[in-house]
Image (cartoon, rainbow, N blue to C red; front, side, top):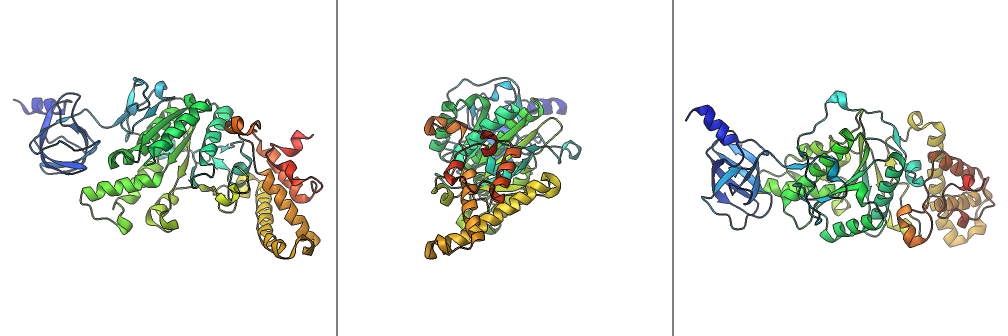
Length: 467
């Protein structure tokens, strides 16, 4: 047979490429009979659609190592392996909304497969001239976010917060507000989180009427490392369809990106690669950059991401946390202490930051008000301890005013959520940044000193609603 014919036959899906020579819990080593196998190609143990699938991780001479997409149970030395088409694909069409996918493009919510066009999850990478860095500011309608941590389209924001502080409600409200304001959809990528949490989010999105505005990918905690490590790529592919083909400004939620780092470390260990500090993959920086650098704005649209980050042992200097943080444009920190005061969103304004808190971007007025508000809150924390010991009557007039203005300001940054209306009975509010600035300025200047602080709790724009 001519060499060209051999190459053509081998390259076809279903062609045999070699035999398994060793099996471990996550990977197999293969003796190759074909020389045209590349990294991230898919192979399987059966010639048809059945069998176990693998992704090629290393090729060395006549042998290759491949990571299993599922379980290696039942595999034996000497089994034939076959080419399985190209690489991992995700649906890339209008049918992606209202579906929950595995990182391998399979529908896992009981709904029929969406069908239509697909795309390789590694394929898209932006050229330098495609990236737009001075995108418009993405106003969310959430007062505390727009005031203390405004975002540009294409930003990457860290979202830090434990269980029970309102993270899911904030995510749902962001999805609701962005769809209402921009008619844009969202993507949620769950990486290494509990399966029941995925089910909770699915049910809550359905109850809130938001499920048809979102596409979800889950590489759950019970899945193997390959599934967890590829969920971020899969979510990005869905988001890129909405950005590039539908020309939308997309919100991408990644929960939790640190689990991707852990999954990659498992794979690196299985491949006998020398780990770096804390057991992370030696390709840690590359693996994170490969995901993060796909989150950007273009002339067609933007992907703005919120990324939940687990911080091991509360060590902000951990190698993985530092590698992720260097890509972020800011962070939103949800605080249990704020939640315990009954204030939602329970955002810690001192720990919440944004790269565009700059007078040249936001304007001098917004920047000055942020500084004044933080100074007021900072002084309030000091005065609270004094009042607890000596009482309110021991404060000077200036400190007395600061104390009560800070309390009014704290109450003002609570906000009724559209997605929580059925629980609170309070209609949701979408607040323009101009109204927020007017209200904050009025509180800090003393114009509203005669208003009770309870009147600022769970309202929209104070001055506008009372004018």
